[in-house]
Every structure is written in structure tokens, then in C-alpha cells.
Image (cartoon, rainbow over all chains, first blue to last red; front, side, top):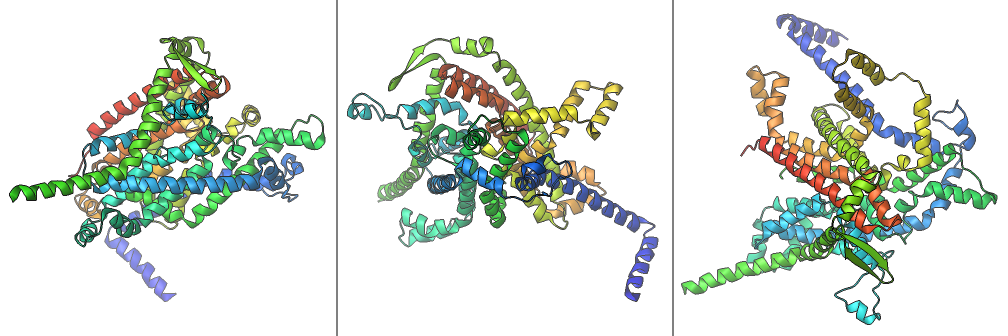
Length: 333
Length: 303
């Protein structure tokens, strides 16, 4: 108590000595931090609110949706929505497919991008600047520009007319299978791959050259140096690029629509969930049924949650890896 | 003797160059097969009539008919194009300003900074791909939202302010755009996750001593913002600007893209779809090029 008093007195004393400057400074800093809190709280709420809203809606029965008293806490708690959404979206199968495709695609993409990034960071060769400019071009040119040509390319797939010869004048239709996308990923042309090359190159450039040179002097070959010495060093950037690749692949609509239309993926089934609901209702009731807007919105929210759920979990555990890779690579352009 | 040594060095360099090429060869192959070829094919297609047949497709040269179709026959394209481009300019500006402002705040020291940073980064992950515009894609729900907006008469602050300013009669159209952005601040916040992190990483490299020196010399915080902070991270404005504009074009709720995909998959009109894509992206890339040239003139490099 007395200690507090002493401190307080000394504050006013100091304030008097500084002719009111100290008080003014203190007041302004308190004001700034309050204003900052309000602003940031508001913005964070703005970002989180749709998510929270979806969570509360997903547990409501249809009755609750129309009840004006019920705002955010459901009166009749139910998990029925989850069951319906899971059935419409074919969730179990979609989840497994999405998981397998996302993991394999991102492993492939990151493996190839690491090789390319290392090549750009450490070797001198002719036309290096030109090829790196092409990487930049790949980042800038949206895949939509070439999507129609790619579509036809894989619709009537052929390698220099060889397949036509074997298959009796017919090309094969690779659309609907996952093969084209794996091929593209192996060639660094998948979703945002230019960005990964750029980030990985940036990271390798910041590693000192000494270790590699020591390895070379000791008679270690290029390939072995890369796998034994550089790869372990680059673990952080590789993990974070992998996380990005996984997450973006998980929610990707563009490439999935173009190439993977035959595969049940959560990102594709969520886009059609409302139409699916109408069909589902018809099947259950046996007659034409119109689904109310509130109901379809509720199912859509539930489905969205089920799609982003795994991603949110991943983000909760690996938040640092996501953010730090960007901050470490963005500085030098 | 001398020549031999020289030859050996040249051989080593050559070997390194070859291994360099081997390392980047996946990119070169992928680039040639999946980028260059479709790129020119798509360009060629935009001057053709594409006819799909059994097991093959034919392209018949058609001059600039498809472009004529896109601009003069198609009822929606021109309207969508101008709307989307205008939206792109306004939102990219808003996103840059917003993310700069937020990163300035997040660079200060306060409790819970890590949490706030994590929340601001969340949209990068959640609102990517199909998740964006899922509600507006759904016609029923979009209709309902429209109805709710029409019916509700809740007082909004921006509405009130808008009325006041409109009666004051100052630059009405410009204000309307500003209000539109403010009303859609949610979209802006969602799209600025990566930009904030990039700005933050730049802000953290500015040495504290510069601010202290400026403070001692009697520089106010406002002045040091423009004289120290702004020049130090001006190169990041360029990075962020390019990223923002490009990112905006790739968003899945982009109406021009939707129109094109519809043209391609539903109507099977590949030629017109190509022509539309090309006009759209030539404009966008020209825009990115010109603006980034202008910005790069203003960028200050320390070294």
C-alpha cells in the first residue's frame, strides 16, 4: 500500500518537474492503446465472425433457424446437419481422396520446386537470368489464360502422334483422371508453383556457401552435397512450402474443376452442396420438394465447416511455419 | 601447362553449369510443354473457330471474328470486363493502403500481438480457392441477401455519413467508391493477409536507432513515418502491388473468369473463350506493367 503511494507521489512529483509533459505523454499512450485495442478487436471480429456464425448455425435445427429469439446459441442442439451434409457431399470418400491427392501433389510439387530453387540459387549457367525471368512470368501469368488450351491438350492427349498410331487414330481422353495434374506438377506448373520456387531459392541464397565448398573439397559430389547437406538445412522452408501447397490444393477450385472432375473431392462437392440438398430431399420424400433458403444456407455452412475443419486444425498447430516462411522470403525482391 | 590449368577450370565451370541445368530441367520442360505450347495455342485459338469432333478437334482460321463476337455480340462481356477492371483498381489500392496501415499497427508492441497476427493471416488459408464467394455463388442465398438488404432499415454509420457528404455535394462519385470499399472492408481484410506479413517483415528490418535519432532531432511521429518508414519499405510496395493485382485476377469469384469458364465448358465455344481471356489478361498485364514501372521509379534503394 505504502509502496504504491510512494510510487504515485513520485509520478506526480516527476510530472510537476517535467511541467506536465509526463502526464501528457502517459495519457496519450493510454489513449493510443485503447484506440488500437478497439480497432484491432473490431477487425479480428470481422474476420472471425463468419466462422463463428457458421459454427453456431450448424448445430441448429430448422425450427431454430426461424425462431427470432435464437441468435447464436441453438435452442434444440442437433448434429443432424453434419450427418446430412456428410451424406450429400460423400464426405468420407471425398476426405480420403482430397487428402491423398493433396498430399501426393504437394510432395511432388515441393520436391521438384526444391530442386529447381536450389539450381537457381547455387549454380552459374548461361541464360540463368532468362529462366528466372520465366519463373517470374509463371507467377504473373494467371493459369486461366492457358486453361482452354490445356483443357483441349489433355482432352485429346497425344505425344508427337505416338498414341494415335498405337490406338488406331484415336487420342486418349485424360480429362477426368488425375494424371494430367501430376504431369503438370512434375513440371512445376501446378498451383502457385512459381511462388514456391521463388521462396525456396530465396532461402537457399541466404545459407552461407562455406559448407558446400567444404563438402566439394572433401570430394562430395553435387547430388550428394545437395541431399546430405543442403536439404537438412532447408527443412523449415520446405515444411512451410509443403503446408501452403497442401492447404491451397485442399481448397483449390480451378485445377480441380479443370482436371479432377471425375474424382470426388471435398472442394468440389462443397460447390454443389445446395443442388445436392434438393436432390437429396427429393430422394427422401419421394416428391418434388423445395428446400427453404434458410435450410440450404445452414447445410452450406455446415459443409463449409467440414471442408475447412482439417485446414484450421493444421493452421492451429503450424501457425508459425506458415507466417515465418513468408516473412523470411519476402524481404529481398 | 598454363593452358591445361585453364582448361580444367573451364571444365569445372562447365560441369557446374550442366548440373545447374539438370537441377532446373523440370522447370524448363514443364514450362515449354505446359506453358509455352498452350500459351501460343490459346492465342492461335482466339483467331479460330474451334470445332470438336470425335477424337479430335479442328481449328479453322477465322480472323478477328471471335474478338468481334466478344465485344459486339456477347451481351455481357463488355459490361463484366469494365466492372471487373474498375473493381480491381479500386480494391488493389484499398488492399495496399489497408495492409500498410495494419502492419504499422501490428509492428507496435502490445499484448496479444501474435494472436492478432495469426488471425489476420487466417484468411490466406481459409478464403482461398473455392471457399471465396461460396455464398454469392449460390443464387438462392444471394437472392435472399439482396432481399434482406432491401428490407432492413438498420442505421449504418456509413449511410449516415454518405447522406451528409452527398448533400454537401463534394465529389460524389469518388466518395461513392470510397464508401463501397468501406462497406466491403471485410473483403479487403480477407485479401490482405500476405501483404501484411510482407510489410511487417520489412518494417522489422528498419533499425530502431534511426527513429531515435529522428526523435531527438525533433522529428514528429508523422514526419518519421514519411521520411523513414515509407522510403525504407518502398520496394515492398512494388512487390505487394504486383501480388495484389495478380491475386485479384485469380480469385474464383471473378466474374469475367466465371463467364469465360462458362463459355468454355457449358457452351463449348473455345474460340470466343480464348478471345475473351486474351483481351482480359492483356489489359491486366499491361496495367501491372505500367503501374509497376511507375512505382519502381519512386522506390528508394538504400544500397
